[in-house]
Image (cartoon, rainbow, N blue to C red; front, side, top):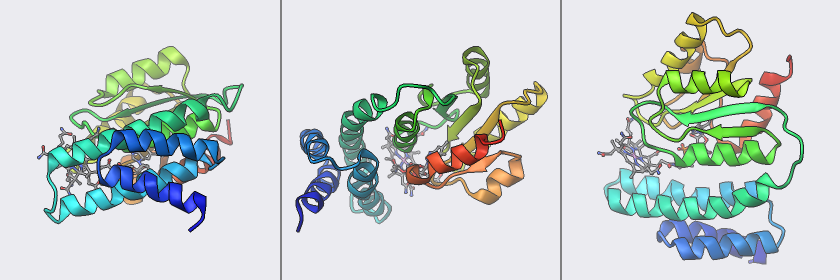
Length: 215
Ligand code: B12
């Protein structure tokens, strides 16, 4: 096994064993070895979260363990995020990100924020449980070109529709939307009149560049 494979495996294990210290150390080792942070997040930490999701789904672990694994994942992301943020000098545009009202899942959104920041966008992360009003008022204040909203539950998906509805009501023509999260699908985004769907962090930069290319 190469050193790179070893570190990716350690990142994965750190999340699987909810070990935040290991996540931090392995993330620092990944940076020292020159592993691309996006690859480290998707192929290391992300794989760990996939197996946590699977074990949770099959009733082998419970919410406290999922929460602890989430903390380990967030710790690893924060090490990479500092590096990603310092990589580019000029902003390509302002993006408002958040998790929709009633939903507290944030990890996927953090991954997306890290990738967009790394690609040179200025990202305002409004956190979790964000109302449509908050998304749209902040977008106006900050002169944003894009709102990204995450929804992980079938019960909170409607929060994405409310954002699109309010943008239409207020006739904000130059503000686009991109949506994602475990329960979100391309069909859903089309049905609510959103501009783009994205299934994972690794694809988000390309998706956003295409979406904003006609500005
Ligand atoms: C971690 C987790 C939690 C953690 C969240 C910690 C945190 N800080 O975020 C905790 C333990 C707190 C939690 C709580 C709950 N959870 Co939970 N949770 C999960 C779990 C296991 C993993 C989610 C995750 O982080 N995945 C890893 C990330 C990296 O992946 P991701 O979120 O999919 O994001 C990627 C893409 O989707 C995409 N993406 C995501 N967002 C966005 C946004 C944009 C703009 C774009 C472009 C892309 C994008 O890019 C990301 C990166 O690649 C999922 C299971 C699952 N399979 O999703 C359940 C899951 C989402 N939870 C679920 C439930 C029910 C709950 C609770 C209600 C449980 C309870 N009984 O209390 C509460 C929610 C309370 C609330 N009001 O929100 C259900 C939802 C079921 C449903 N269909 O509605 C799931 C699916 C589990 C299940 N199978 O039952 N949960």
